[in-house]
Structures are given as structure tokens and as C-alpha cells.
Length: 578
Image 1 (cartoon, one colour):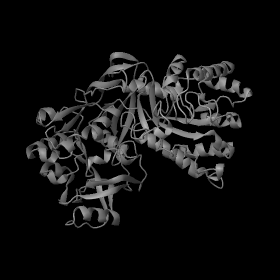
Image 2: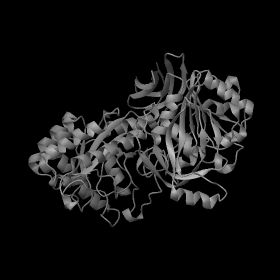
Image 3: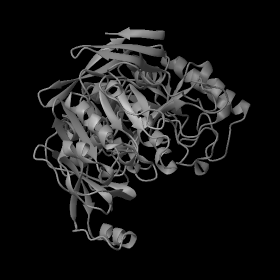
Image 4: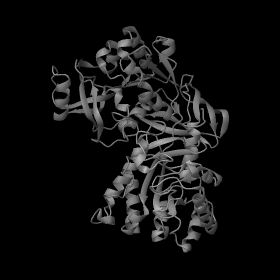
């Protein structure tokens, strides 16, 4: 990991051992196919902490010796079917039969011969690709789609090509469909006027068992994982990573982010004497109210102190008030040194009166952050921005295309601050203007005639699902002003209903500081070597972390896959995990 001025650059880390994945690419393939593999597959594997090594067909060919000692095989590039020989696909099929997993992200079944098609029993493959902008989850139970809702739809930002197979084996389970309706038919008939498709749902994710192994085939172009088409962290990533954890030979270890869940409120002044925060703790949350420190009544300062010292509620500074930011002149530009001295003197005096020190995580008002303020923040022990946005810019000048690692997004990320890598930024949000889950659910500003508990809980559940499906943490966000129109009984019922709606999700409640430290540690470490004897997994981790981490270990349990954790203490350079 190299740092300096600008963005921190990471190196690609591959792994050794029979517990690692074998990722097949072709460096001699068409440029516009090979160039997207980093964005579509490799960045995701790094984010999910999955150990892998590359097999580049331009440099070596698959052999039994390279295929057998791995947890699973990922065909990661479009067009590999044209690069692999028939005998090589036979070797891959044999490896699956002997227990290796297979996930084929190369959608174009037309290029494959008998052995790989035989795994799925594919027949009557349409010679013409179709195009769809909608994926639908089928109404069936399976580990891969367990975190999805039956019949759920995902709408892409543009059309994506796919291949239709009219027939598959009896033991093969279709998990998701591409929608080919009137609009999609008009589109594809314009691009391929000689094609004739029946308007209907065409399966495009298939799962099966083959001998001692398991296999998944995507017949949707892997470009769907590019930001320009749909991308990662948009609601479908569980199909990606669960295909791997379902197929991989077990036990399978990964340096994944545990399913942390947290909560925050912006624009807080002490409505209901912060009872909403107390109620959140009874539901397991370790929440963070971000304060307009000029407007908080003195009588509530002891309560703030107790919340911080107990570790139950993590109050922090949000702004002086709605129109006076701490680290930027609202809508104008950077603060002068004198203005910063004055603002932070007020901040210091406030927390001195509270009698407690706020945590390391910063959640500032409005999203305009001055670069000049960074030394002031650092001097006070702050190190995490949640969220970060783009320091030094007027809000109108920010571009949503300039995001952070791993996927270049401003919604889900963890990365170092480009202006000063002593700061670490993280977020797990929905698209801009969709962050506040109570919007449209309460009488506040007459957004609704009454408080709709069911709708509010549904929105909160959506935020949880969004983060956890993507292998990030999850955060529920709203603003304290909403509680002008929401009773504490209604709030309690909203959180209770949210818990019911996400009962199928494993959740570990954590504070923002805990999540920030964990993400920074995870980002700086990787599985260097993973070996398994079929019962236990032995991992060597490399890198550096200042906090303990939890390695996820996946095991088969009947038809399901269970996730266990192995804790590794903070370390420098290397650590062994058993």
C-alpha cells in the first residue's frame, strides 16, 4: 500500500494453498473483455477478502495439477469459452466432479463444448443474444438467493446482453430470470433484426451439484457488474459472493466484513431528551447522534456524558447549528484560520462542559468539508469520516462519479482520505437523496398524513439489506427533526418491525468507531496462504491491523452453508489463524 499526496494505492494480493480460488483469465483475449475483469471480478474478490490466484491462459494452460488443489474455479472473463480447448473444459468438469467449486461468469454458452455444458445439461442454446434491463429473483428457496425477496426485481441502468438456454438438467436450479418484455424486445430487434424471441422471463443464473462439487452459471453478461451498467453494491452482490461460498470446497475461509449494523441521526438538538437513542439501544444498536452543539440544552449534557462513558450512545459534533458548519463556510468556501480557531474553541468548550470526549468518527452537517480543518480534527483525535464526500469542494461542484474504493462509489466504500491519508473514510448508504429512511413516512413537512410504521420499517430494512447483501456493514440513517412528528411509541414499533423484517439476516450491532477501526484493519490485511484438510482451515494472514479481526469460515451443513468466525489478534506483518 503506497501513500503520499492523493489517493492511497493498493497492490493486488494473490494467495497460495488449496483453500484459495483459481481465477481464470486470458491476457491475450479481446481488449474490451480483459480490461473489465478488474472492475467486475477482481475488486469484488478483494473486497470480500476471498483468497485467489490467477491462471492466465496467455501464460499457462489448465492442467489437473493446477485445477485440483483449489477451493473453486472462477471463469472470470467473457470469451473464455473460445479460449479454452475442449479437453481443457473437460479437465475443469473433472475438477468439479472431484469436489472443486465452479462459478462461470462468462455468459456466452455458445462458445462452450460438451463437458461444461454437460454439468448443467444445457441444450438448445439460442444463437442470438438477447438484452434485458431487469433481473427477477425466482420464487424458490436456495442459499444463493436467501437474502433476496422472492420475486424481487433489480432494474439496471442500461441494457445488458444475455444468452438464453431453452433446456437444462433436471437437477439444475434456475435462481433468477432476465425479463424480455415489450420494451426489451423492441431494443433487441433493433440491434439484431434477424432474431425472434418469445416475450417471457429467461433464466440467467443456474446452480447445480456435479459429482462431489457444485457449480453456478451466469448467462448474463458480466458487464452488469460495471458501474455504467449496474455495478456492485446495488442490491445483487449476494448473488455474486454467495455463488462462490456455496460452490467452494469447504471449509472456505475469507477475510470478509462481518455483518455489522449501526444507526445514526443527523441535526440533533435533544428532542424527546434523546429518548429515541435510548430506545435504539434496547433494540441492540450502538447509535450515534450528531449534534448541533450550539442548540443542545445544558440540562442534557450529563445525559450525553453518561451515554459516551458507558459506550452505549456515541454522541459527536455535527455543526454549530443548521447554517453554521464547523469546518466550512456553508455554501461559500474554506474557513479562514481565525474562523477555525473560533469554531474549535467553541467545540472544545462544549465537550469540556459535557465532561466526556467524543469518539474518533466524524459525521458533519451538509457534506461540505474544508481541507484547512483537517489538522484541527487530527489534533483532537478524530480519524474517521462517515461519510467523506469530497473535501474542499462546494456541494454543487461534487461529482458522484468520483468515489472511493473498492468500487469507485460514494455510497458504499472504505478508503483513505486523499487530502490526508491519516484519515480513513467509510459509508454504506443508498443512492443520494434516499439516505433518510423516515422520509415520506411521517407527518413531518406533511410528507405523509400519519406515521406509517410499516413503510418506515420497510425503508429501514432496505438499508440493512443493502449493506449486508453487498458484504459491507449496514447503517440506518435519519434526522432528528422527524421526531417532531413521531412519537416514541411509534419509534419503538418501527425498530421492532425492522427487526422482524430482517430476521433472516445475521446482524452484529456495532458502533461507528468499532466499524471504522475494523474496516481499516481489514483493508490492510489479506489471506496470504490458506490450506485445508477437508475439516479445518489453516490461514496465514499478511499486512497490519491494530484491532482484532474475524476470519469468516464457511461450511456446508446439509443443503445450506453456515458461516463461522475465527478471531485473529492485532498483528504486524503476519499471523496464523487456525
